[in-house]
Amino acid sequence: MGLSFETVTPLAPDYREEPYWWREAAPAPLPPAPLQTEVDVVVVGGGYTGMMAAARLAQRGLSVALLEKHELGWGASSRNGGMVHPGFKVSPGALLERYRDRGRELYRASLEAFALVEDTITTNRIECEYERTGHLHLAYKPAHVDHLEAEAQVLRQEFGVDARVLDRDALASEIGSPVYHGALLYERSGGLHPAKYFAGLARLARDGGAHLHDQTPATAIERRDRGGFVVVTPRGRFTTRDVLLATNGYSDGLVPSIRRRIIPIGSYIIATEPLSADRARGAIPNRRMLFDSKNFLYYWRLSSDNRMLFGGRASFAPTTIGSARDWLYTAMIRVHPQLAGIMVEHAWGGYVGFTFDRLPHIGRIEGITYALGYCGTGVAMSTYFGQLAADWIAGGELPGCWQRAFPGLPL
Ligand SMILES: Cc1cc2nc3c(=O)[nH]c(=O)nc-3n(C[C@H](O)[C@H](O)[C@H](O)COP(=O)(O)OP(=O)(O)OC[C@H]3O[C@@H](n4cnc5c(N)ncnc54)[C@H](O)[C@@H]3O)c2cc1C
Image 1 (cartoon, rainbow, N blue to C red):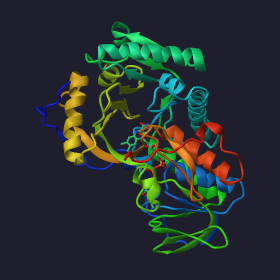
Image 2: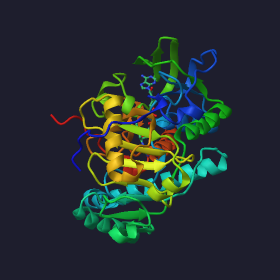
Image 3: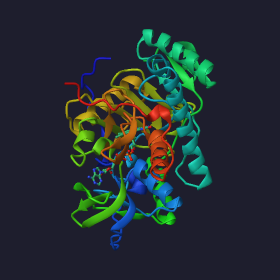
């Protein structure tokens, strides 16, 4: 599908370049509160990873201060597509081939991550429009159908996961699009409202007694002679035993060796005006979450009020929201020609944090714990890493499959 921009994107009168999710759950400034400057743990970064970690640490009886540069949830955690599923950028087959038993454990961990999100939502009654919709991984080229078939086999045989491939004919009952050659249908996945999910995690952390500080960038981490750290911010200095870095695609120069291992890549989404029930059903009859098999993939879904949310990852070159919006609109109409003329109400972007081995990493560097690198599939894994990092800091063991070298920039 060569993309030329012959389509002029029709914009709604109240078109806004900010996440659709912010209409009902925008990141908002906290009321001023005194800083808690002596704590057991300082968490840097207020997204799913940091907030889940803060909630868990507080629950385990540790004092914790979470520092966020902007408003809480301002990063990818209130901007994403809200698709929750197990797995990584690396396919389950490639995981087994590359890492054998360790690869098996990694995929199993991603199944646990998905279960953790569902359990966290249910147990804590987080109202985030979660639905177990299942998802489709769509074959963009005929040859991709064979890859998906191989993946489905690995999922069924190795992990007991209900996954099967639909051919082009069977696909007609799942998507109103002439573009795709088949798809892997995966039932154990769903969709949520990402900003409302984040707000739920923030409530858990706050209710548990974590100290949450927004507009508080960590600008330096100093080591203390007697052990522990001082985390420096423009608002004050925090003395702490442990630091958790949870900054993913927004990692700045705070820990330079981490910055060298994370590649921030822009991902963009448009949200249309609400579609009629018939039009929505015609495009995605079973309300599945969808993404395709291109390298710079498209991902799309319906919102609970029947808007089409259509996203894609940019190349490494920087782009503007306006130009991303135009190529996404053109792509959306190619995929769903029946949506031609539909107006766009929101367009926005955010950074995903890529790694050189396309897997997330949790570990310690010079005593600082980090948990990041979700490569664009992080709703489930960041929740899981937040919990795992907290348990590790609180004295638990890090499972062997995560004790892996964290590759840096190839020289
Ligand atoms: C457009 C888009 C669509 C996506 N769609 C999906 C999807 O559908 N499904 C899926 O699984 N994943 C998706 N993702 C990925 C997912 O959103 C992320 O993996 C996840 O939100 C990462 O959470 P996090 O807490 O690690 O990082 P973030 O939510 O990005 O939070 C990091 C925070 O750190 C803060 N920070 C940085 N430096 C400092 C500092 N020095 N001091 C204090 N604070 C600092 C930043 O301000 C930021 O708020 C998408 C991402 C984007 C951008």
